[in-house]
Length: 264
Image 1 (cartoon, one colour):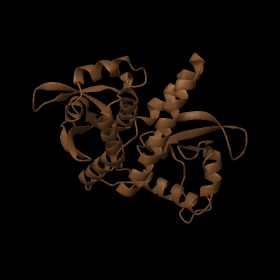
Image 2 (cartoon, rainbow, N blue to C red; image 1 turned 90 degrees about the horizontal axis):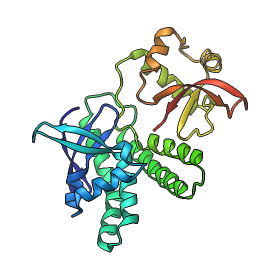
Image 3 (cartoon, helix red, strand yellow; image 1 turned 90 degrees about the vertical axis):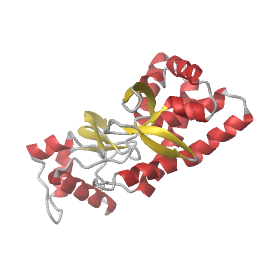
Image 4 (cartoon, one colour; image 1 turned 45 degrees about the vertical axis):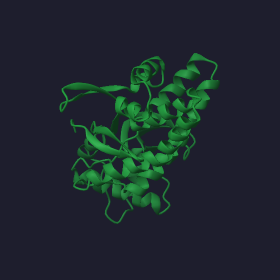
């Protein structure tokens, strides 16, 4: 989506757009609604190593201008840091309301807009996932403050950046092969079959194809891991395909080559 959409955010309305993966919220109108100096906040964002890489400028065709935006995961981090930076009690209270009420209303709005698309998760599930995400972002942000080595900071910063790209309203790519695969995989996992080799199984899904082939062979409608399916899996948006990596498996307790997906 290239156009901006007037989007409810608690009792505010802010322009938002969709880049095919997540919702991007316009920064300046949100600053204006909170009576903040948008230029000062843009400078603050530019000086913040965790947020500046997330700022994406999109053309606002209606007004013929460019509009800096943040993905809503990044927006959650920014609002957290605004509360730490500004001492004004009224503003801090306002920010707490936006964190608590703003994101649920935004998620509801964008879920309704996607009714014509096939969604893997509904609005209630998406909001639960986002609440967990807010907690994870806050924890990583706190860990960054206490990190002492550049390597540790780099690792934490990479994890934080990934969380801030939280996908909103995952859309099917239209592949029946892929849809059937995920229905089968998640169905088996809900039945108690342990397929996820990731240590952080709440955030990531790591599938080893040799193990998966054995498990799916006993399914009511067995699925073959064909070249076509592998190609479609690389395009998967939910779970979001991250790459093929060597994983320290929590199932076999050894290193295995796995296809890794982000569950958020």
